[in-house]
Length: 405
Image (cartoon, rainbow, N blue to C red; front, side, top):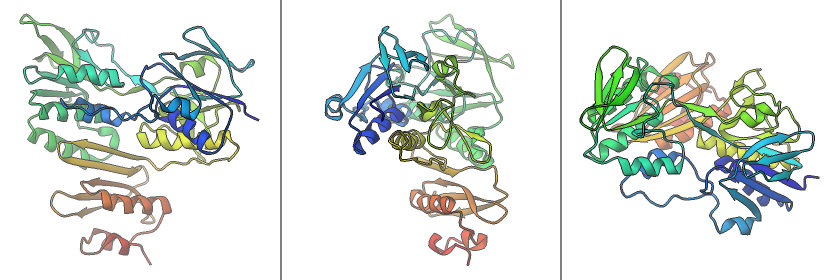
């Protein structure tokens, strides 16, 4: 019988663990320990709405007044620093010690800051927390020049919000394309056109090697080709580092995150992990770590059920979305098994790209301003239905009619 659950972390995954436990009737003790002083929230708004001059109040997943209602002991600004697996206790950053029957590691990750000289200057921002977003929002003003380092999703969304605010933007990406990890050359090309048409000065195959104070009060970035660019403000979007140190130090099996099974259970049967810090070991012998709001929510729910003995089997379908300017980009599935590609042109600026495997089952779908069709394609991917590739490409045929017979 689990009488006490300690949750290390107080983000989205942590919130869904706690909510799921209470929703399923768990009456034991729940303690949530988070390094931030903010209640749990979703992170996608940080690089979107929260950077707007008129940013709305952040919608919390558990409001301040809900913690007593849920009987969740929230310890803001207090993180778990050490796990004693033998005694089943944790030590907190305030030196407090807690006992647990089950421990959930939901510590998320932190922004990766490359070891570039000058990246420790005050003009350099990363974007991972609500406080980060507030500081960056205050710094983005039309009289300041922005240099974004990194052409991934965070960098592109920051660039889009800055251009909307009238800020001149240069974006430096060390690779040959934007969002290269997406696995879609079409998407890289599309994003390049989208941002260039909105006034972003794109510098591909360009790496910042040094940042220093310039003579006029601004800052000068030097690139690997010897060229330089002056700016007042820098945002680095260089990926995520999982916060798995307490798990590593406790001897849990880790590989850039805490290795867990489909129930969210780590190599210690009394310790679970969920969200960005968790690495799911798949039935095929591979591993999967998903940095998305959908995974944080769904894996948090699955862990909550597993803690109650419901034996939840969590095998996620990757899903991601991004909003840039007036464009909604959504992706579902993975591209690894895609051998045939079908493009389905929608109305206006709608586009859909579908990846099919050798048996013509959909394994990946990407939609540009096509949320309704993406919902249908996500079901096709989940159900592993064989599709008629010719009907799929015919925009006169509704998606409900493209399943092969």
